[in-house]
Image 1 (spheres, rainbow, N blue to C red):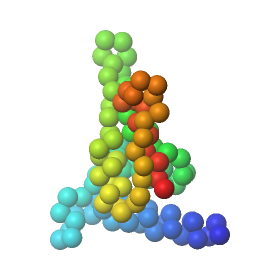
Image 2: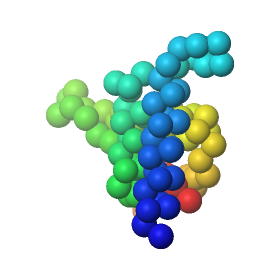
Image 3: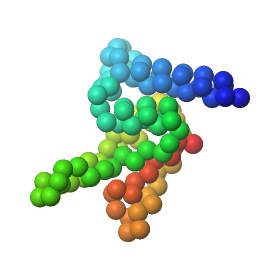
Image 4: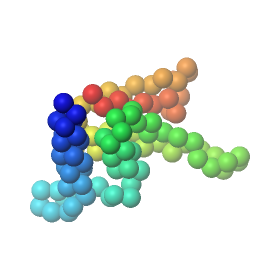
Length: 101
């Protein structure tokens, strides 16, 4: 049973890496240095849900970095089923949670 899960994960990561190559079939490749790529790869390797929005900066220069739409685009291109939810008490952006099914 674990071998099957591992092979599926490896095949999915190979498919994720294939999205980074520019060719006829893939006119708009995904950059390996993008946060969305890194978040999806980490989620596939660990099985943990993705938190695509986080706070960055400090004091007066703080803000939210929201990668929700980019992560959803990567997952859609891979054909992976996911659930987008929010667990913040008042529905703020930092409560965004993407769970891979």
